[in-house]
Length: 139
Length: 139
Length: 139
Length: 139
Figure 1 (cartoon, helix red, strand yellow):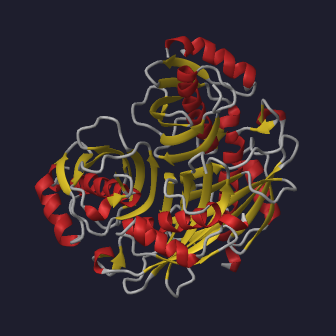
Figure 2 (cartoon, chains in turn yellow, orange, brown, green; figure 1 turned 180 degrees about the vertical axis):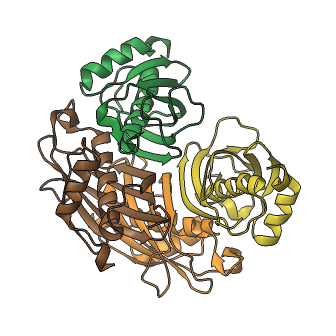
């Protein structure tokens, strides 16, 4: 799939254009995986000095999308069909959130991946997600 | 549990204070259920005239939290442990998102609920979620 | 879809032929829903007088399959792509397990349903599942 | 936790006594992980030469249970609260099913793990699950 492969920088640009509200940076892609960094803002915080669950879900969904697009090319119409997330530990309020996605299936119609989500600098995941995207048939 | 029951208005105020970034309005609570309305802003949109997945996840998580708090009182420390969401139909871009949660278990340590998520005015759900909250032991 | 609609008895017969190990009885179908009864045997029990989790998962998966086939006809090749189950209460050891499935999406490629699972005679669910089937394109 | 650590052979014996219907063999435990082998029987087959979904769910649940017990000791009362499984590829009918579980959280009340499920001899997973067990407080 060398001719559809996409760089991390191209993916970040694509996310910015297609999802102006996205603040994520695609740090690394390749080998059916992607690493996404989300700089945390005030809107992501919860009382008690932690990060809100929906922010972690956003990172999970984005990292999965980045991993898929890095393989199939910049197809804006791939859509999430299922996301399951387990919240494991309290994320640190002052740290970026890092999502590391590995695809476990890249089929013609469905792609499935798992995402480990970290507070930057900590190697114990704060959350873990699996998700499925439906891929448009005509690619 | 009459003495811990909380009104929809009290819950909306609580959400605003504890989660300044939350824009949801608790419209109705009672009988282990809650209805949450999210006025959709530009930050919730995706290209193609639809609502982003993470916005739907936010509604699912909030509606579940509202249903639980309406039963156990305003306990800020209940935390989501698991959320599973299926995306079913494309939400309309110009409509509020409505989440209707029914608790299916309200235990001492864990509460589980399901949430049907709608575009305002449409009776076919755009997404369906189930989620679990861990309830702090000392309540 | 009147010409593909299938009766509960036809579904039970189909299950018996296609899945000889299945012991479930389709009690009712119609309106994108299905009720499945599983007579519980020794192999389903766990110590402490309860029913094993995998038996409840079997009921969830079967009830969902029955609901889908009752709408699209007896298509042996529909396959589960995702199942999420929450275990809520301890099932009674001596009671049949009843799964009540309602479809929440019946698309061309994917069908999604939710299943409430009961011990026969009790109206509090012992488990709740949501699942997705991929439907073969050429039907 | 050296004094509660349990060997693979002890776990297999425990499974046999506590779950007479279980046919799984715990092949390896250690480091918050466990490998479970399920010899496939006629009751696990589906038409078209494949293995039934509920059999894969049984392997997922058992491998997770084995990984947890290998850390906390032989506590029969730990119970599954949530299991989410994605079915990825068609398993081979004539091969044992292998489940490889890694715990991603081992808390006081909840343990969470992920399980990759394989047909014996194939390195592409046929399914992937994540699950949560509630651990009895008095251990």
